[in-house]
Image (cartoon, rainbow, N blue to C red):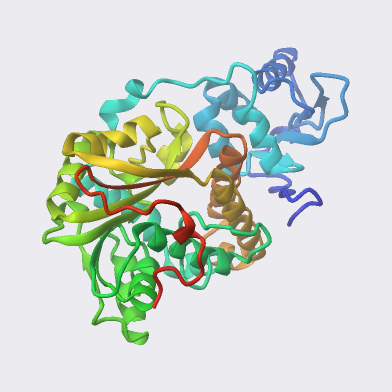
Length: 419
């Protein structure tokens, strides 16, 4: 349920299995540990509630949020490795956050001295071979099409929308995002486009139906490709769009435009040189491309809980790292746009729709799954509103191609490029 501030007011099981509130005993050292947990968060206006109901406040300020620990183990693990274990304990129902969940996570992101571990610490873990990439994609995207239908838009777009007006509906903003991409690429009828990582196929269908291009779209998620092929047939677009259940490394042929929306974060930085060579090989001399990806404000390690529990193998790049895809192949950047605020708005819609579908989602899976995905969506929203995460759109072409607009007017004309 949504609270008055647009956050999510949450409460979990009143007495989880093995709840230690029965004996009502709390040691003095456990109170000190709770104070350390709150201090590690920067002592925000949050009170801690121990398993016997005892409340600990780090300051005299009124507490806007209550952090309730149902078990001693949850407190110990949260102090031992909060980045990894706090989300686990929340998902298991051993921790509850009573108040605005998004605001609470924002405070954790923005706490004084928050660590920003360098990327090199875990670089060797992200060896995203084809086999590992398939396993990573299965873990997240093949959960269930019916699950994603409950809270995505009607086109099943699972990437950042574009809110030309913040009051736009999610459906309108996702169509606006696809148009924004197409206008940047200046697609023309009859051109050939290759899409690396196509999700449920919405952008490929949009490019074909609105801009008259032929599209080869690549994705290794079986569930998504099956959905995309079926929908293209039903919409009469299967002659213009071909969905390949294959990896981006399998791309062959020559194209007028390359586009990738929401895939680069799964590639792994060690594979950027290979991706760049594929783009270089497939683009015509007048070809151009666009990469749309979540990213970081500087090179650093991705959140370990998200990488371990939600997006295995994920490695969002800093903008400087993204450039290593293009620079070795004489591909030059034409435009860079950061849509961070647009992704925050997208996540507000997703989280609200998710909460409205909680009963159905719980029936599909279980309470732990609901809490896991709630924490992921709320945490992702907080990551964007706090500035830890970015959303980059990078437009590029070949260095020798001077066929570029003199201004940006074409991006904002409603009839630009369409058919």
